[in-house]
Image (cartoon, rainbow, N blue to C red; front, top):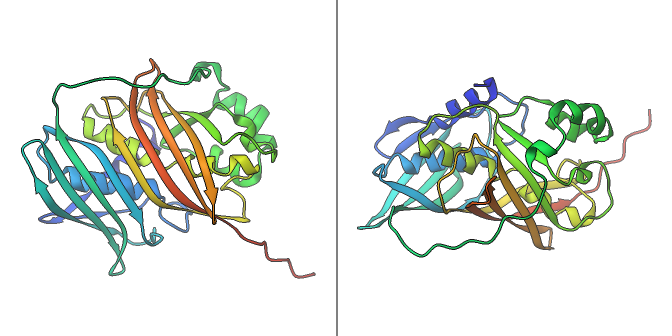
Amino acid sequence: MTHAVDELLGILDLEQLEHDLFRGRSPKARWQRVFGGQVIGQALVAATRTVPPERRPHSLHAYFLLGGDPRVPIIYEVDRIRDGRSFTTRRVVAIQHGRPIFSMSASFHVAEPGFDHQVPMPAVPMPEELPDERSLKATVMPRMPDPVRAYFERERPIELKAVELERYISREPQPPRFHVWIRATGPLPDDPAVHQSVLAYASDMTLLDTALAAHGRTVFERTIQPASLDHALWFHRPFRADEWLLYAQDSPSASGACGFSRGLIFTRDGTLVASVAQEGMIRQVREEPQAPE
């Protein structure tokens, strides 16, 4: 297990303070705000711990209210909305400095048989056909902007292999689509709840950036102010987050400083395991002119 994965599992292992009350911490990183995927993953852990293990989450709907402060813990308060015969509903509020920064509703369902169909997986190169980390560092990273290169060079709990690498080395407008293979950078425990929480964490990665593809821009630019506003995730079928998953994303619309993106997540054999939708702020800001020396 890599250090980054070990740290991620530690972050997702919330401390229980009281009945339906949990505390989460943030990694020791240089982020000015808490990563949105971290809050989604932690909130899902908090909700899951109040539900019988035979009921698995099938959907969550979340709103980001305020930017999280990575210097202080996050308190997660779970409200047991409903416990039905087949479905369970929980509401989670994340609190910092006495104010809610995030709210989420999650629904849990007992396994049962039913109709089954899915859309096919897009035809894209498999992860082994894409440049590995060594090739990427030698050929692509030198052409990347400094913020993008710094992100890809650091140790991460989630490995990314982008199909459309030109997104990060060109400012030419591209179709608003993005395909990226993702997986944890080390083995995870067999508990399905862990894999769902790790995927919830990863589902906030690259999705908002897809809305900027049509404009030849990325969230890594200093003149782009990005922020996730709301996030929805549906789990369809079992999966492992430490095995390659294709995150197929597109952005049907961007307007009014907001971008809307969707994602379908497939196993490498083409099984659709999750769907995602998100709207986020992609505000364009003017860079302050530097004072003459």
